[in-house]
Image 1 (cartoon, rainbow, N blue to C red):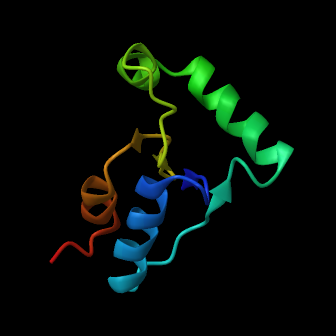
Image 2 (image 1 turned 90 degrees about the vertical axis):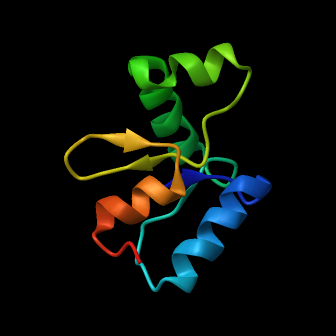
Image 3 (image 1 turned 120 degrees about the vertical axis):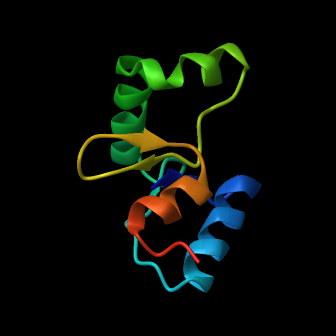
Length: 85
């Protein structure tokens, strides 16, 4: 999951995932340049971000899955994990 410790949507998503007991890798794009560069490459190279960018949003939280698919929805991330309840 790409996000930022200063983004309220990221914090809310992390709380939901933690409450459900789901494990995830968190990459704070405002914490290290490496994660920021990784996120910007993803954002600049994927059509998934087009509507997000057109709306003036950053695109976090962003959940990138092992199969390469992604979502901006914590609910979809939970479904993808197979632990939706």
